[in-house]
Amino acid sequence: MPHTRPSLTAGDHVCQAKPWPRPGPGADDIVGRRRVHGPSQGCRGGEAGKSLRFFVSDCDHRGMGAHDQEQCIFCAIVAGEAEASVVFSDDRVVAFMDIGAVTPGHVLVVPRRHAVGLEDLDEETSTHVWRVGHRIGQAFRQSGLRCEGVNVFLADGAAAFQEIFHFHLHVFPRYKDDGFRIHADWATRDRHLLDEEALYVQRGLAALDLAGRAEPNDPRPREHHEM
Image 1 (cartoon, helix red, strand yellow):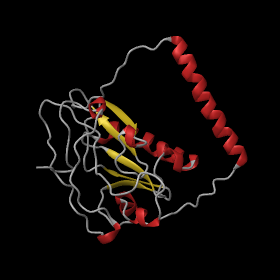
Image 2: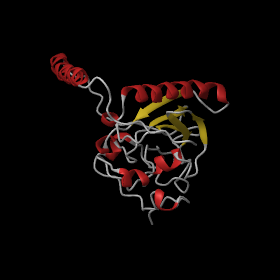
Image 3: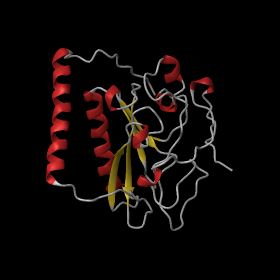
Image 4: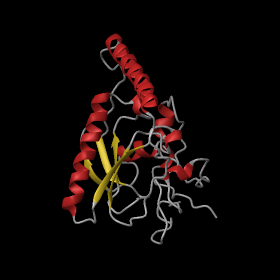
């Protein structure tokens, strides 16, 4: 029987409970032998791995309008309409505990302004998100939580395992045998392939520079919500 995440108390302003989907093809690239399926009911302990699988939102992936934003769980948390255990907030971001944590202490850093991913978030706000994530990662080692290392993780797009389409940064403590694994083909690439791919990345950076010269100011409005 599939787990569901509990309905929250923010009425029509938050996503309603929804069954967790079966993992799609390629999901094992980033998970261990067992997945954490639900926010609080999911399995814990045992011998197998954990995954970065969290709430599944009803929001569209791209081009979200005002109605879609009202249904975004992170927007509801930012607005104080949904429950969260907040560790830090300022006029640009809110950082709170992930209810489907990979390890104890797992924090999500979320911009107050709704943005789906990297393409939608201005660099100033993105820089601040990462700055706060950096500080939280440092704080783990002074917190009393078990922490022998730190992962900072961003999922941008469905292919990258993003499941809530409001930009967010994962920061979580790591320790030996914590069960989290990332599986991939780590084969060393030939130099000519690396050089060729570097040219593609340089082309993308040049395109961004050109777009920046054409539009020096970010035209998108910034929204601030009081906690």
